[in-house]
Image (cartoon, rainbow, N blue to C red; front, side, top):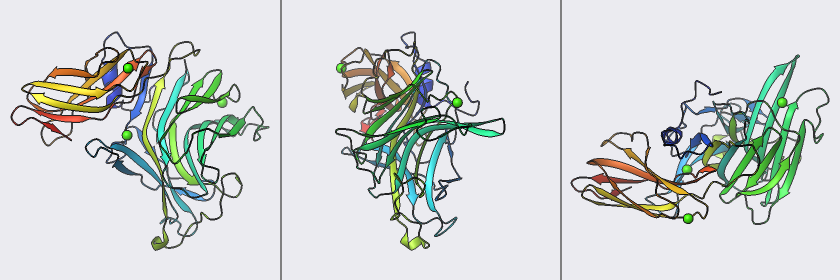
Length: 381
Ligand SMILES: [Ca+2]
Ligand SMILES: [Ca+2]
Ligand SMILES: [Ca+2]
């Protein structure tokens, strides 16, 4: 049930244009958060109060960093400020983004993000989650699936929770029907580093994966309302002692503001397809894409980071001088373990990127490189 407000991202359009090798799986939403602004055709920005202590409405920021200055990691920064211009001294000022599109769990759906809590202070709730509610017999019933980093906890800890019909008569925490959560301590995990967080939602269960490792399964509660994807940074109130910390408090003056950041590199929602049984992992994204130009030939080289891909997909977008790039379109599908492709391109500026793919779907894209074909053609950032 596609929301008519939702305009498919470029990545999904390009995928839909591929020939018959397409797996049954389908990317439903992808945002690499390249900035400079939130894509308003995909995302809404929350403006409500949560947990009686945080006012949402803080605009996210965008940033880029990494070892390669020409091809940095680009990401969105969801912020929490201790100063709120809306209610100074009364509320903290946080950010939540939510997809305008809702997703069903038919055949299974995966919500995937790569994120880090860049700032280390107790009292933060950094969330990657789904949430929806409906009205029934005078009650609001909500369904939800969460990853939550609680910065009051040790940095190898993450909270996973599922909810079904929360608000119905008899709803109680940890009742196993309407709510169930688990604070997991994970070997090698540190929420200050970049990690991937995936929630797989099937009709009969919810699975949580951290860095592609299954860390938790719930067969109840399992939501059944369609769910948008969300990410937020906020501060819990005293009613949530696992998360609340008194040291994180609103300030009355902008000069005293302290800002915290939950960085999200990308969010992808994928229809998993199949019977919801066993699954194949999506391959790791290729990296280090570089291009050289010789006449009308563009020689692409990349690093193969996957051991389970069946092919790579090379994308090209035409970039008219001084204008935004056109949509990426798939132009070639070299086989497993390929690390190069030579394209013949018309004169002009072009952008390239590469993904790895298998029966489970398609990896996030590599870095993007730009070239100029024709006079003076050479790689450019
Ligand atoms: Ca429900
Ligand atoms: Ca990114
Ligand atoms: Ca390989």
